[in-house]
Length: 205
Image 1 (cartoon, rainbow, N blue to C red):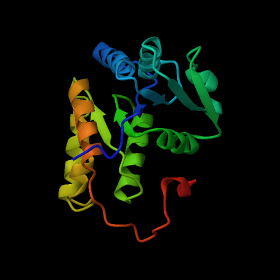
Image 2 (cartoon, rainbow, N blue to C red):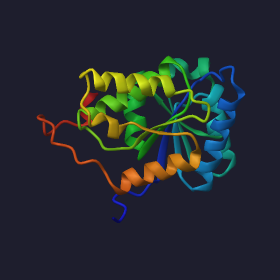
Image 3 (cartoon, helix red, strand yellow):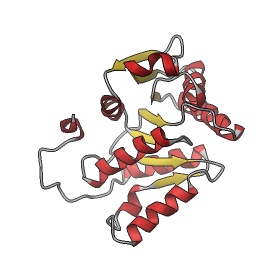
C-alpha cells in the first residue's frame, strides 16, 4: 500500500529531568540526531533541561527545524534552548493541543508524571477516534515495560477495548521506532466513527 501520510513532523514527549540512568539522556540525543538526519521537524515541550533539552539540542545541531511549545509559567523553571523557535502558550492543555496539531506522530521517551500524562492523553484521544496519529513508546532500557504491562492488564480486565492493543506501539531502537511509525502511517487502523461526528481534538479546547 502506498503511504497515506508522509512523516514530516514528530512530537517527542520526555522528561524535563535527566533521571539517574545516563542511557536515557544518550537515547534522547540519538533520537534528536536521527530526526535531523531524516530531515524531520521536531516538536517538543520547549524546556532546555533533562531529556527535553538533550533531544532538542541534538536535533537543532543536526540542522532540523525544532519548535518548543511551553506554557508561560514554565519559561523560567525549565529554561529554553537559545536559537530554537518557541511557542509560548497559556497552559498545559493548550500545549498538548498545539503539539498535536503540529505533529504527524508521537514518540514517548523516558520521563516522569508529566510525560506519562501527555502520553495517556493523546492515547485517550485516539481511543475516542479523534485521531489516527501513531503513538510509540521508545526505550532501550526496558523503562516502559511495566507501563505496557499495565495497559495490557487494563485491556484484559475489560476497561479498554481489545483494539487498544493495536494503538500502543513500542520499540527498543530508534530504527525500529521509525519503521513502526511509517508502517502505521502506511496502514492506518480502521475506526468506527465517533457518535459525535463533528468532534475533533481541537474541539476539546
